Picture (spheres, rainbow, N blue to C red):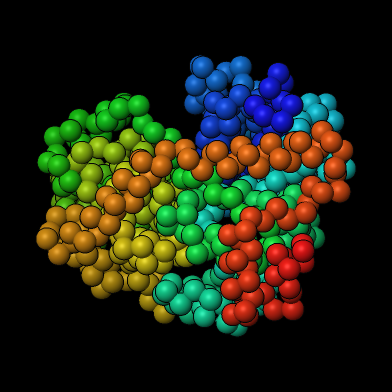
Length: 499
């Protein structure tokens, strides 16, 4: 390493939110940094640390240290529920409150392990506050895409009245705008999510890391830099590469191997979203009508709150499994999604469009059939549509899946997976997959450079400069253009401020 750090390792403390969609990219970023000789202190709850233990490569074991964060427990929230995985929905606010209450425990961890840098998630402003109070720089790592982050940031700073004019290429419905407006109104411990996001953005020291890459989101990365007045650094897709094309374990492996090339679709709505009975039935009928082979991963929350464990056959339409026969397979629980997407028999992905699922699908060149459900998923689906790597399942004005639209989407599935008219989408998906393969971990060189800059400032005692925005000339030019177009009202371009 450069800048006086050749003989010592930079110690980086990582603190993700307690959801799989956050823990996973934090872990992948940790692995990439560990391969570059940084020492990673991965901080989370015992149940999460136990779940990732087996995912740590043996060759990196000395560079990644697991640090347990103790949360308050209760009858409803024992230690094994200190994760959103399988958590009944009525306990989500309880988990958020417990996470907030761990701030003092986190303070003790910071002062004990004395990291050189904290990398934190987007809804925990107390984490960078703890680090900065100990003279340790902190950087936020945004696990969503740049489009979502840019639209949310613009809405929080300037209101949503003209947000569609900023990104006219993104076809967003009135329902989706309404969902976006309501997204961060919930409050836990008297702190609204809106306030949490703003404070997390403000406390990130001059830069912000983002799970994306410029080839698909350059405009939105630059816009986010403009809105935040910070340098936004994409870290790449952070998709774990399967070791081989063999789907390890499970009764579905034999089923997949028997199918023809590109003849099947994977159907999955994420590890932590649970379909309503209505939505499950609509999707089931659509799959039945499609006549395509499919492997459908279904999940149910852990029993609790007076609810018993749901049964797959009871939730599906009566006789569904018998009617689809060998053409379809329904699997309950977890599956190795990346390995399935890479399997030769998979030609499409019916997905909720969680950001990790989107980038995984793009990485493996699999066209997406987007059926978003909540949070950032509707915007991710519209980005998929704009990039030309998939099609969107439209909803009714009331926001529900309807059979007529499911039937239309099913016909689109057939086009994308099997017919000549879907060739454009398939080729676009392959094009982005090729770009990602050729790039490798190219973005990480910039990430490492920026981390080194922060750590050199810390070593020189330049704490007052930590939170100065570190913008390169390209970003300054983007900001000047956007400012002239009215992107940042009442603010001067940063490049002018710094002169």
